[in-house]
Length: 188
Image 1 (cartoon, one colour):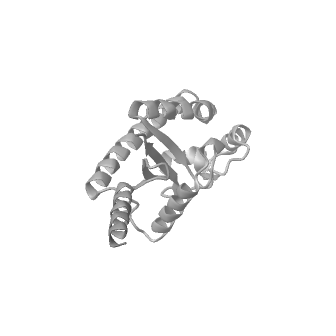
Image 2: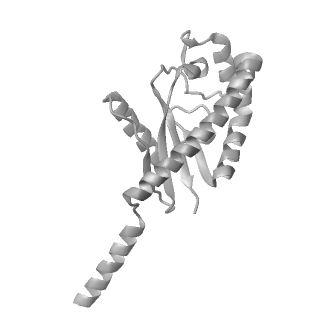
Image 3: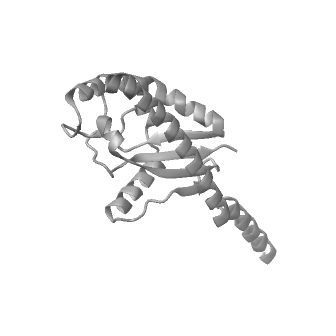
């Protein structure tokens, strides 16, 4: 009997060990996750800013509507990961958050409210893959499309957003607000 309990304990310990990361591994995934999200943000924002220069929000919003997901897909292929930008206030329903992503968003909102530093989260997900989460914070450039009506967001832009995104909830922010999160799943 003792032998069976010992073997079972060892097996359970091995299973538990396979579901966690060492501190060093977490640091490596945080570094890689930051690299991926920085590159993805840069690619998305530079394309969006180029469209803003060409034709303002009338050019940028339709571009974002049709090209943000393909740009994200190219970055996924480049880094061999799955990348998602999600929020509890969606603009694009294709970015709907999972239950875990909503928990991460809620945790970040609480930390932000309590003036705590928002740091990336790395964990093993339900598929046994490494998952990286990082906050997306609203800055001044975001206000044109995500600000409050009359405070960064004008009526014309608001109307265009409502046309392309009839169920949009991604407005009413101010600088420094949590817009959502990056969710990056590292493929095996």
